[in-house]
Image (tube, rainbow, N blue to C red; front, side, top):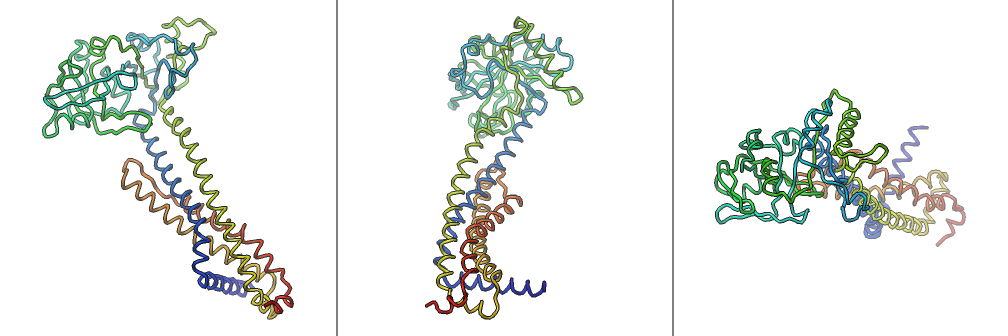
Length: 421
């Protein structure tokens, strides 16, 4: 009995394929909606998965056990914050030294300042007749690269304790800036002018183009924090970074840092902190907010495509039932059961949507490959999970929208069918 059922299924499947082949144009137009729906889901899933990996790698490079202190929450527009937050006191240059002593469970504590276009400042770096605009200047201490591994030295060295102690005019260049100013020679040992002041190049960072949330290391130049304080006393927006060792409880370390800063800033007991403590996860959180909108948009587009495709499938199957009424009567007259007729028409619907789903998956794979080729930093990858989901969606649409016509065909009276012209 099982073999007979398998044979019948195979026969019905071949009959379904033959029916679809006999009306190629109609079938092609019907699967178009399925193709659009499945390809949009698959391609967007592949791109988002690649971007998620990109963001996660970014978070890791910022330091998985690195945390930041700032005046405002990261990723917010200060002008839109409540006045009680906008009027917070600036962080001070001496905070790091105090926190180092007051927080024994914290390994590295370092302060850094930034002067960039996003703060309304303009910077210019010059070497000979070459110059670069929109440079981001960062003042940092020697521990900075250890706290934030994203700023990794490719050639030369970073700011030393001697440079910091004597406020020496030395600079580490982002790779893009180095290539723009010194396209045919090594930048190490050369001199540049940053906003008119002369600096010696002591190092070059590894390439990093950045994330859509902000500038990459490529457009940064880093000078000793002491020199930054001397050259740009008006740049008061400071930040702090601290690291917590693997064997230390993060909450304990956070508590020590928070209490130290509350004492420094004389915050009365019972009042909220007037500073923000963040982890690199703020990038992931920002990204999740952005992808939420993308997912909703993709869902709407794919749902419309699948709905249109599903209605097309139902329509073509209803037409098929009408056109093949006599065939249904003959099949029933020679012993076909209702289940056999229902299965045949359901298989036709499923084959139709599976063809559309397969084309959609192939298009999605093509889009992910194109993205990965054009933007290597975004490893858009078509996973087996989403391929499976694509097939499940295709079969589900076929079964859902094909059941009514299939059931209609199964319930036709064979006598009436044989009289039908």
